[in-house]
Figure 1 (cartoon, rainbow, N blue to C red):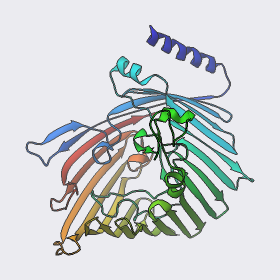
Figure 2 (cartoon, rainbow, N blue to C red):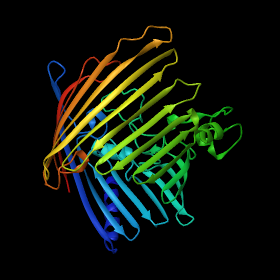
Figure 3 (cartoon, rainbow, N blue to C red):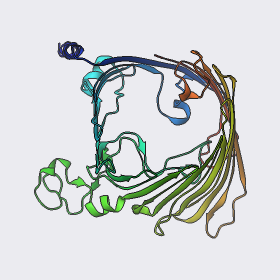
Length: 429
């Protein structure tokens, strides 16, 4: 009976909203695929979506979304085949904006109803634009996905790639994080600072036990309304202020440069790009320079040529990673690739290649390891069924993808050996 009442309530609310002026939108998507591992005997095949095998997110499934826009207000409701009913409220007032979204049904009740996993990531964040839009102040408990003050990112991510095309983000990349950000946006220059964890961590496992706390009812030695946290939280200086991230970005054609600094571990990032016609060249560095921690640095860059119908790129880097025992790993990575729109309206052929030269030593006194060379090749075919333009996975929403990946077996440590074929079918409206 309770489940029926919930559905009736949702329908009643939707009926009332229909009476308002505004624009309605309806969209849906579905994705079905299969992944065949040819490296095992006998070969095995399993259902899988495009991003699941190598990026470990998304899976076979579909969703339906209903949206309503009225002036600065946006409302949405989504139904996910894998389980979950989500709601979204976004209000964009120009000089301020906020979003509150999440699951509309209790998690346990929904799982009991459809016998499926909960699958709706909520968000809660907002910003103000102050002083004639020069100052940007953003508070997030479950942030939007965004990255500030970044340019070339070849050097971002782990200094030693453990998988082919194993890229990463800079220090100021956030998605479902908690922080307070204050920035200044000028015509060609932006800069600012981020204070993570200021509103607590959305993942309780990351809470720090506060020294001197005696458990529930006692927070830093005194009675407080924070007793529900059981004496867990963040020390304001070490846990918040010393975790600050500062950055800036400067744009003036044909160049852009960006830099970031993270106080907690002396993390440093800088990157830049140069644009001239169809050619883009980039250079970047990212590292952890705290003398009390193992050093991890990566320096790299690349060149991309993309006149439209075809394109090519090559990235390269040098990475160094030291461990607590004094040993180190080093890696030189070279990753060329190209694409060709065989049928400009429908079909793209794309191939990515990687060469990885791995070395190092176990400790400072041990002999150097023999140089190990790993390589990887990944050809792909992207078919846009609607003929709206050839592109990669995010370039179209209805079509088919065939991908083959082979990785050498002489890579070291966790470098993923692979000999696999996968196919994906996508639909959307």
